Image (tube, rainbow, N blue to C red; front, side, top):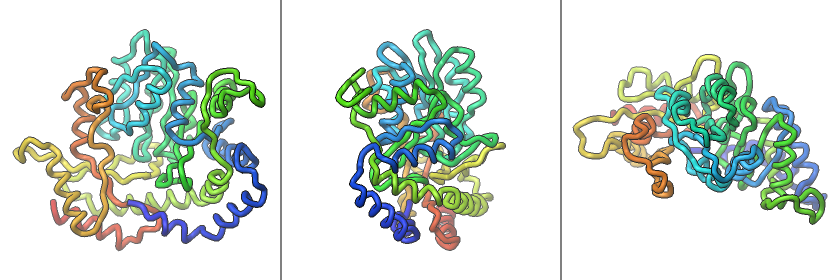
Length: 373
């Protein structure tokens, strides 16, 4: 799916030199590299403030807590997303409520959100899936009208934009992930919260460091969730290349789209008007085919097996929507409840996409998909 070795080969000298600088200073936690990276990412994303944390999951959890979400609250989020989004809601003490997806973008459907809002609803999490923008204007209007906190889960879409603004700059705050495979990935786990709200930023900074307001003075229970200096310096090096890497991803995505134009069984990702997709994942939908047994994913799975037989990786993000996950069975989700999310889980297939791919490699993947359909 990605080739991190190929990426490392292009930046190895810079990365090793940067890490050596940290080793020379022997400052590893909450040091100058993190402070510089926070400033640089805030500027890049069009935010005033950025707070580095240990992972994207922690970023979501601490963002929720810093925005006042807790026991007795409900948080609406898409059912079609990674487990961490709902896990963060649980970790913050709230109850996740699952919304359906927009059939075109597979991002959270604002109309589905609207009908789920109750007196207990405290926040909405808008996940920007695969590198594409959720419908932020409608969500912002709804959040403003109903007095809700709007948090962006930007773990997959750093560098993407909508109406000239970077994703992650719309909501009360945004959480992002620097998991190694991401468009901007650390050499381990790392995450960040971005906001314009001083109180939110101050509370996140406190929570990530055991709730301390001063050395060994705890204002509230917190946790150990600090983005360390080595990860920060690696990310600073890699951030210099982020826009270049995204441009390469977009070029490869355009090639895939061209190759699949006349293949009726394939729906390619939607590059919405006024948006710039960052293509963390190139995820197509393989149309379900009736009459092939009880498994509506059989056609998609057949394509995946065929690719594997050719030595080509693919992956399914995600095979089961959250409302049907065993972890959340107690919330009462049922099959058929969220039809768009459920259909997407049967149809999505992510194909190899990374900046260092060649056109020949993209064509080989496309040829292998087309020949089995």
